[in-house]
Amino acid sequence: MDDVEVLSTIVGLLKKLEPDAQQRVLHSVQTFLAIPSQRDAHLPTHAKVLQSSFLSTSPTDFSRDRTLSPKEFIRDKHPVTDGDRVTCLAYYLTHYRETPHFKTVDISGLNTEAAQPKLSNPSAAVENATRDGYLVAGTKGNKQISSAGEKYVEMLPDREAATEALRSLRTRRAIKKRKPKTA
Image (cartoon, rainbow, N blue to C red):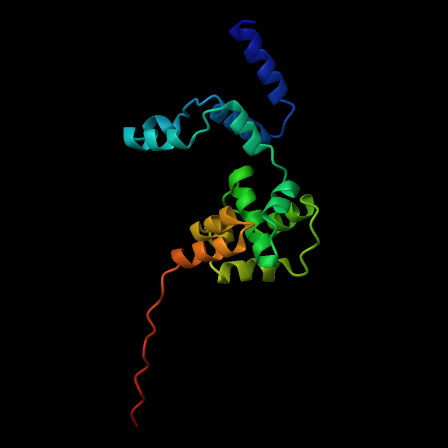
């Protein structure tokens, strides 16, 4: 097969997909084959080295990591509370669907796709995860997973280790003493 035939086949197949799916597939192929993107070309050398260290070196590692369904991911992480489940779903959106910024409806949709019990109040669950430091505000009213939330999910299903990791990432706020009011 020559270059023109390969290109023709790829373009023919990509035309059948929605634009966002086309981008996802192209990015996945680029990552799988360790082809630097145009935006990577402008990175300083030390950033390219750091970025390449995160790329998978084995095609089987790449495919194994990215083919995990949301259902399998949630099953493996075994979240107990709605806040834990929301955080796991946010992690999945960020790392498996390349959607770092999301709305509550995205979490609810992924929860349904993962065949999980319906969240009784998705907005409250997302706000609880935000209050606990697992999620933070993103742009345009979106949410995103925090670094503490990512670390927490990575340590699951070992809840003790996950809680300890989260505790070590949190900084203690100084308590301000109130001055007594003078009459």
